[in-house]
Image (cartoon, rainbow, N blue to C red; front, side):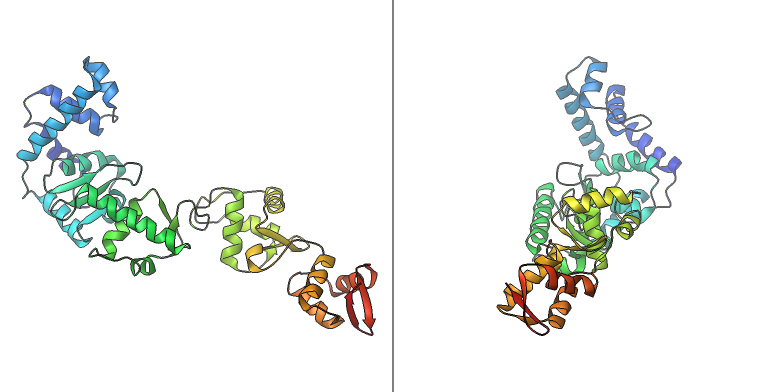
Length: 336
């Protein structure tokens, strides 16, 4: 596929269009497909030709069917495309095709046109569910592709966390290869991937959009509490939507979102790691309630340090000075 030049593809397109008798048919296909012009809507073409948009749709459909009837299935472009589709289990996304062939974006309209006039290929144009998909007509119908896509999305939703595609594939029943399902995932508008992990586009772990999402992603990836200035630095190199942000903007979002807990001077952790918001005194209070009795000072200090990055003296001063705590005996404290 990557051996076809711009001139060769244009020649194949013009040769096919030349078999149509009416210039109007050729004009509609060129304008609808964006061949040597900007792709145009049914309404725009209809207005220019003084016909309804429905009539333009009929002309386009009829012209494509006539070209399919005359299609040469043994031409070199067809054989190359069939080979590529076969290697992917009978289906490939337009994105996958572009990546595999290093296809120049300027050639995409010509390639799509040549695919549409091939009766042995199903071309599913972009819609609310996925971007363009190309498949072997003998193996797939548009409805079956939609069904496979929906099963894939539902499986990932049920898994409820991002995962490598090899692991997702193991959860899916059916005859389709991992390559086929991966191509559908690539085309899906409902799925995203980041660092090799796949999930729903609504999940910040794979599709972070806001500063808060990116903060969450950075902390989740590092797996330990860090200072807000370090979080700001790491956001600028996040693989998905990298963007430079100020430390103040990051700090403001950290304060607002309950997913993030301040555990030391400017140091934040995720609440899902077991940290909770509150003062050092609040943490000591929780520890003593959990223990249901007094604890040695050293043990209290150890447990607080597991939840907060503060100085030992700060913990001791809270024990000695806060009215909710009392010294039971030497080195032992409980609730007042």
